[in-house]
Image 1 (cartoon, protein in one colour):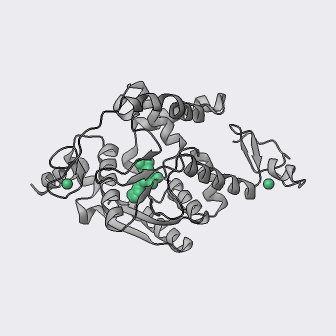
Image 2 (tube, rainbow, N blue to C red):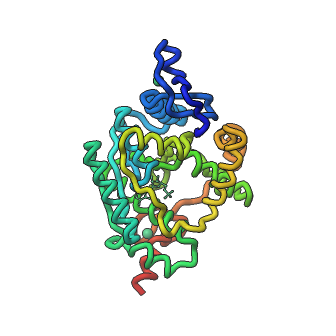
Image 3 (cartoon, rainbow, N blue to C red):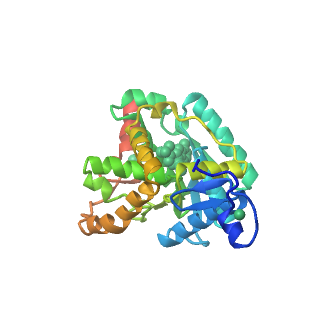
Length: 309
Ligand code: AMP
Ligand code: ZN
Ligand code: ZN
């Protein structure tokens, strides 16, 4: 992306006989674009991904899980601009300054885009992440991920939405795929698809930015003047996914397109094979909260009990 030569013209403008200079170069797509055409390209790519994976339509009520980061805010902005009925959902994780800043930025953005942002606070629902972290042996991000997914599902249903859209991007998906492949974690690989269908109390979950890189979403926020939280969650430090991202980015630097190919070829060639061997696990309903669970009491209710005692 940095390899833009001085004076390069925008590929789209050039085709139209205009002379606008490119401000972005996307080596893996061999595209040099001006600001306007980059924004257009980004939104078209999101729309194409939504259609390719049949994620949702203009009739659906979509709840965008908003963290205050560049990806989820880019996603929300693009969906509203594309004419989708998309509101936001923010979970206050209770992580000091990080949560205060990300909440403020999410609320500011909601105002700017003129849509509702629903918020819930883990402090009221269960306990803030720093307290939960002391009680579990699991890595923080993994425990936090389970809790976020639980409240997204619970509230999306309560508030009458049929789809949850998250801002996971290509870098996230390729890094998770890399980790799961290194460990040959077949059960996770079987579920690594940008659409998780609604079933047994789970509502549909989609990742419309799965073909958009982190850099592309950063540029999209920049060109649209969207302010987002620029520092990472303090608990994510040392997470293995960050190392995997670094390794993949080194490969990408030498061979543009590696990340996209790794991910899309998995979806095309490997996922269908794994899917054939999917064994359906019997879903139950948590006896305490009524949310879907593989055990009689779901993991969040178990955690809540542990905190109480
Ligand atoms: P992360 O797991 O932090 O990489 O975030 C992945 C996606 O999960 C984001 O793009 C959001 O869509 C969603 N997400 C993360 N944190 C929150 C939060 N605090 N509230 C709502 N959604 C979130
Ligand atoms: Zn142009
Ligand atoms: Zn429960």
